[in-house]
Image (cartoon, rainbow, N blue to C red; front, side, top):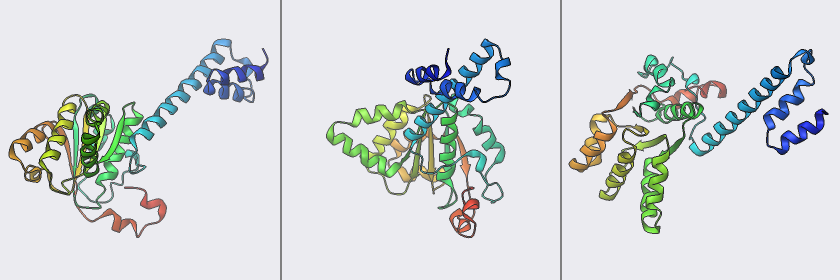
Length: 252
């Protein structure tokens, strides 16, 4: 069979990974010495890799991460109380399978959002879905959705995501409605999905930040007791980044 028509048929069937691999094999020395099964195996491997990469890109687009962050790029030289052994443990993804949460606290500019995005990026690479959300904006969106009839649909969409990042918890006082919205989100996810929360305030202050004692107990019960904690400290990474080259400043 002629190679060019075969490649065209592979593209028609949307087997682009196999098509590229078949085209590449034409220029590989001694490829004719491979058996039919070996040729087919290489083509199938290429197609599988191509599809995995496409699915990853789809998950990353859905995640809409604030930063292009990877766990491999974490800079442990900056003293901010980041436990390297814990980060290695989180990198394995076991917390995702166990439906645990991660709470990241520390002062502004210390890299909380970056680390949260790095964890979500790693989750996407391991086949999980994720989404970055600023909590103040999400609560506003839920209020709007309640008015136009999308409220239940939006909650259902959030519940299906394997990981959500709730960034900037505690920036503003919560209303009664917002407290109940937050409880609804966490109730849907408790022991089913994972939630990453970032805040400038220590976890010990969250009860007071939420406001209503009864709802605070219910929210924190679903969020804190099954969570890893990253308590960061030190000087703002943004200040440090201004004195570095562009390449160095991407390593948080």
